[in-house]
Length: 162
Image (cartoon, rainbow, N blue to C red; front, side, top):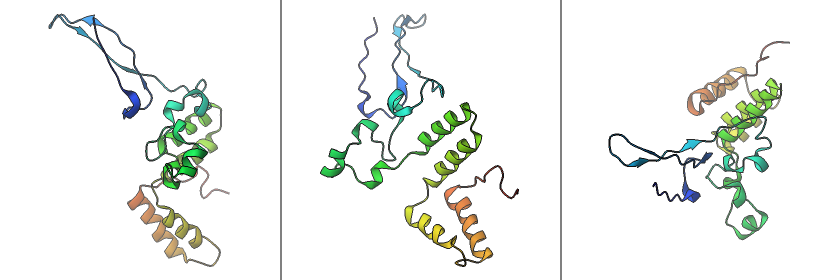
């Protein structure tokens, strides 16, 4: 018999469900147990919040069920804790692709890259992109910094095309 006690409240393997399979090991004579990951299905698992809330976490690792107005008002949750994770945006991109929306999928993937960039930097870039605020060289320098410092490289598929 295989006895298994699992506390999933602090499990780093979000998206896993426990499937216990036991079999007697020919080498040890003891039963062995295994865990398998529940696969994400873009058709069946959308919307994520209602069908796969186990996959939705904040940047700080809080579960979707922990996000409530009560927790925000009481101070248990602050603005940094309700930011979306790049992994969630990638799942949304998979859903978009599955529904024939490649441009939306590309936008989700670019947004995932932006989650690594601090808010202050995003505001700096936003202001620099306003008309007459920056030279071409300054914008190219900022683009290079985004690529090197934050690994943000995506360009829309139609970039540079009319």
